[in-house]
Image (cartoon, rainbow, N blue to C red):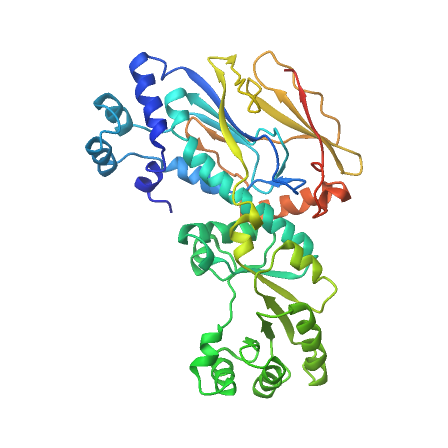
Length: 433
């Protein structure tokens, strides 16, 4: 669970500056609508994937300013007494609607809508963006990797390449995208994600010989374990592995060199030794492009670390949190290249009868505004998530959203799944503005 104190301290200084000023001038209690969207996709991407919604709802639910936090704010003169008293009683009491996890999004998609007083909604900006930007970046990269793997098993192994809490969130995002397991045990305990792993080169070098290292691991874990065979000479390593574990050896892992060539040679050697069922695991700085390049090679499992937890070059999605409505009146930002569209919004995803997505229709939402007419194969994308500050019951869970993403990818036009640069997989159309 999230520590309430740490959640509240995710608030940015400038949010408390705005809160203090709004409480003083009387505008803090105006009813406002904020929305999260992105103006563009990262270069080379044709779709985005929503991640982190469940983590965000938990963070909002636990968003509190306890005595320790308030004392810190007072000591550092971050805000005045009036603001401190207001924060002491803060509980988010507004509404939240949004795209569920595993849903695809495109430029301008209204990913999250937060409705409430200005005071309570503005406080959530940093926690909302920090979670959604991180998790959506990781799940988008992981989804591209899973598509490139074309049904082969992927293991998330990036815990040593990022912040310790980001590692847990990244493992969850990877599982959402279709990864089979993670090496992160905390993610396994917290989210029920299957865990998997093998030994490192240090374990082999600890022993007086490679054979002794393999014998120790097999004795402890059984013949179905994965033996790391490239610490010294990979050909000799494979031979020794099969001699120690027998032809029922579970897997060998290759972590360096030209893994495509080495995997091909390893398959030939394993088969010649009778270990025809032994799987080949490759790791070592893999990303979606490397995985795609290995599609023709006899690789059974990919272990991915650094590129996954860093969003494969895009560790954030460029999501923004903008005020869209005040007391029912649309408001817009007109800054050059950062224009926004006013008013509360939803989106209608149009589809062909075959299920292929055609376009994302973003439209105004609210009293007296007629939504676009939905055809028999169309659907409105946002779901109600929070009402009156309370998370709704029976929201889709992690396994549900894994399936959602799988179905969403099938709905894309075939060119939308390409790894090469191109236009968004489906266009965004704006209506009623």
